[in-house]
Image 1 (cartoon, rainbow, N blue to C red):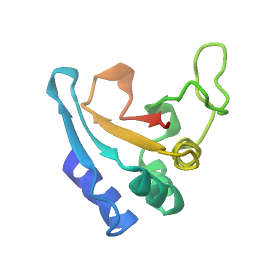
Image 2 (cartoon, rainbow, N blue to C red):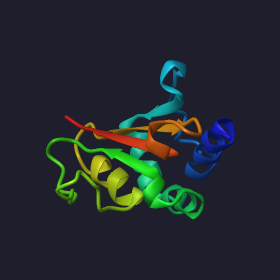
Image 3 (tube, rainbow, N blue to C red):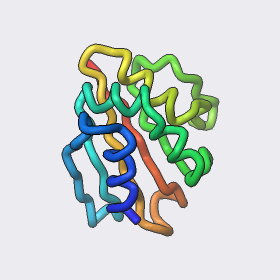
Image 4 (spheres, helix red, strand yellow):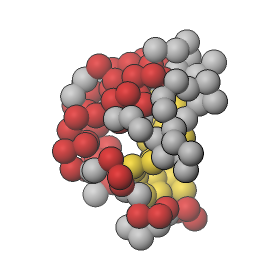
Length: 119
């Protein structure tokens, strides 16, 4: 499943996306760190829409940058689409994301976690 997900992200985003793989077997997840260029390619392409066709928003987690403008409720719930999270990172200098696919039954039932980063 993870390999298929990573392959879909790369194929849908085009040649610009290679990503740096990250394996965290002790935490039950694998992922990919996208460069700023790759993050912009994903943000402007079909990947966020395709992913949300298969993974509902309530099965995704987001680690937002401290300077985010995305709304987070009093319980820490993020109220944004996958595209909004990726796009916000892409719009900042040095903006990138790390995307993790979680093993079933881990991370509170989340299938996907995404973390923003920028300078």
